[in-house]
Length: 451
Ligand code: UNU
Ligand code: FES
Ligand code: FE
Image (cartoon, rainbow, N blue to C red; front, side):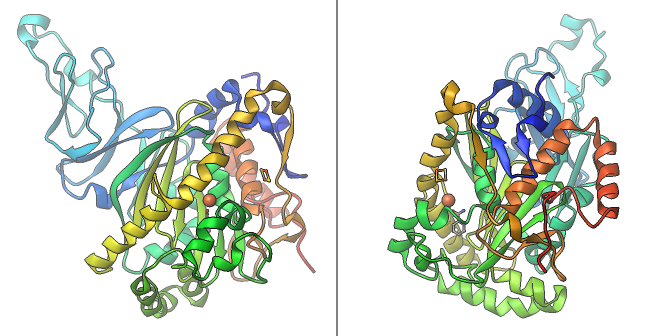
């Protein structure tokens, strides 16, 4: 690849070239270096609970089938027939004994083995070596808190190590009773580069009061004061950037702020002591905070607003957005239903907030169709002088919710992954950097601890 990612991103000064949302060549490099090496969210165990259940999704541009075998093991295969390469499974999800191709009828079992070939004796004279024509398997599939991820790179660290410090934070809602995703996911197309919504969800609390000014005002409630960005309430939250490009921002005590559901707030208040007893006061506090978050590279969620998203890249200028509702397992069934309604009212395909965002997602991408516009740069310097560490919180922490620390961490790891020869180089560097003063590849190099 001739493209040099390092020249497009300047971590020291918080600058990205606008080309990163447009270039075809960079997009192809992302597929090879980012999506082929990262752990990518596939689905949640709650979506495929029984043997034979399957869920079709994408890892980057590769279509994959995630299924539960007879023995209950979760596997992922490329969704491509080994005969003439047709897309094997055309359903989005379901329960089956086998996957049969619509072109010539080759049939594969849940273990990915080629089980049946029409006219095997007459057409192939029984000479077809079926054992060598199984479905290509995604080499690594693991789950954390029921969230199933897959990785194409056999040399990648375990999912637990990849999530790293972010796993500690995710336990805030996964460790007590467990969570589930209510599906099937809503699916729609956004006309934007996949990194635009990703950087929005990982850190952008700055846009909330402005882009969503009308929605916040109409809704009322605890976040109405943010409408219009006329004031930044002091100490409303923090922002965190963790190793491997994950991160999130929190608004304290605001988990249920976008809901019109007093019973959701009651549920959180009732369970908070359990979370604190299990995980400590700090995570008990995080349990009742609203989070906007990103799991590197293209999985985002809003804890509190209960939306869980994948931005599936479809070329440099489009992405498919898939939206599930995130709930806790021990919520009463009617509360789960109410929460799903609220989550989709705000951040579903036709949600008020989702619609507000779409215009800007498009604008941040398509303005770069202009070769002159595309030569420009963008800044992510917000709060750079406040990037620091925290005595109780892992990763790098900015003491203000209005910050771009998590975006800086995202692009820093993005560049590292794109430039590294392989995962061994990344792992070695993480340790080296950590020994030399507590930095890690999740954080900006300019981190200046406050006195
Ligand atoms: O629009 C968002 N990402 C958002 C909305 C984040 C936090 C609160 C409300
Ligand atoms: Fe932020 Fe225009 S004001 S993109
Ligand atoms: Fe938004």
